[in-house]
Length: 129
Image (cartoon, rainbow, N blue to C red):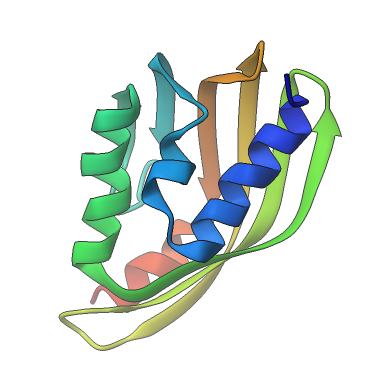
């Protein structure tokens, strides 16, 4: 079985490649995925289908060129921490943004049990108005 660090590294590699199935692969049916309050997709979603619809596909509808650039993944065993930068252009306003982000991943036996996003929602919000 791959390490938790390898599981999250594979998620980020899939994200960079635009591979939605690869991004969802480490999520279980009970995974709790929380997007930060103030973010366009704010809320907690349970399971890969909910994350796909309410986060990944929703962001594609809201932004052109929505991208996560990962600077570092910190390996803390059952907890993995991704640090990076979001960027994109709001489809309606045409305004671009860059926002720092931290992802906190919790895994059991290689499956994500929870995900929490912490990001500078002000930078994203400014692009929407």
